[in-house]
Image (cartoon, rainbow, N blue to C red; front, side, top):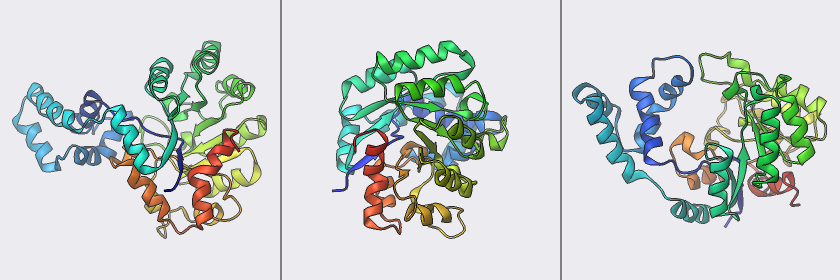
Length: 315
């Protein structure tokens, strides 16, 4: 069986989270901002609970909000996967361990403590909090044992090269942990589309040459830019998070340069990240789609396993 390290391993959501995300699609899909994600991914979330679009519209027309909550909760409770069940799914998919985030540093630590050999904690802190955020990052790493920091222009509305992120990058470099940076377009309609453009990560890599950076989500639709970044900066990796692997090899999809360089000159700098819940599909299927890509077998092993081990200092 193939060995896998998943650098964006979604934890299985509970019933309340499943219902909340589906209600975003039912009741908020016409709103601006984050609510637009309900519009973009709503049908996938509906299918995950075995609803058709017609069934959802009928619920919306015929039932009261309280009755809709009851129906959705009943269906969601049937779909909930416990952590022990999820560990079994990881075993079946060949996942040795994955980076996880459970809502905040303390909740993540509690989850990791249950399965310390299978999960590594990811930290997210608010760069607008200044030195408070720096101290929280240090506490999460030194006291809780978390292993990476996620810098998210998408969450906080500032670009990767914004100086408010810089004290956190400096602390991450000091702590010798990788920084994952949200590097792609956003469906949020209250932020500019280019909030996560790869070009802004260039400044970060220039200013912090010792910092281990993962440009998350492959940089789409600016894939040539993220390839250029990785060619310029030896400390920068590219992750496959947020995009179904089977589309990476589709002509005209915009991923042609990743497939070319990722199979040749940059084969040591692409890392696997499933983001499986984004697609409402089993994590094993995401891995199978990656294995089906037209890459050399040795390259598939690097993408799925060895490059992540090197990133975390294990090789």
